[in-house]
Image (cartoon, rainbow, N blue to C red; front, side):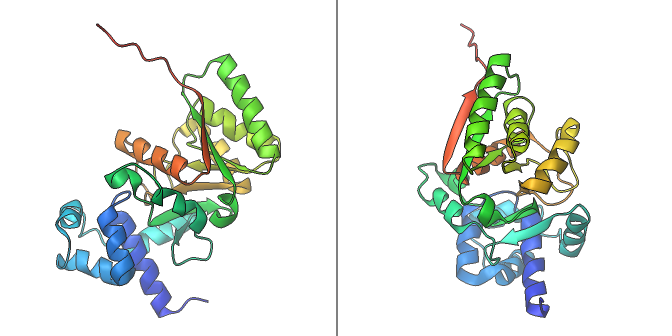
Length: 250
């Protein structure tokens, strides 16, 4: 049973998830120093903020709709999971600490909206399997073969829920009774692509849908890139099954 302090912290996390989009190293550092409630209050007051975080929250700090976001997420079957929760995938988050990427690309998530199973169980042994949306028949067959073997071995198949290779990986894991996680580039209440609504429902029943974005957020180009970092960062290995041929002019 949660008390008033727990509720305040939960609302602070939800506020931060709305106001600071995606990963932000400065916010992660502040959370480690003062915790979510004080970090949220500093952003609201516009005081005690490092310059990069002040700039990142300038246009959103007034969006204090934590209660609405938590309620809307719950209506869609999602919960907000943070480092304060027992299911937070601590070992998977450690992968980010060894990254050679710079800036936001290497920053771990500070909160995740989740529909489905516990994150610590799903990411305890996980493999990312990704590829082009324009999959060839050969690429699809190889994905089925690889995903089937990995899923039967007990590892979770993690992908982005997109058309092509992603979808084949998710469906194959489900067909062999394995576990799969779709990391979304949009918030709870938004199915993208819409044609995969039933697939997402099935994934949520046997695995999980995971996103850094709050309810109602639509997909955008930069959000797919952020999502891809999460797919790779939360897993122990990444398999790029098939990539689209890129032709350069000149």
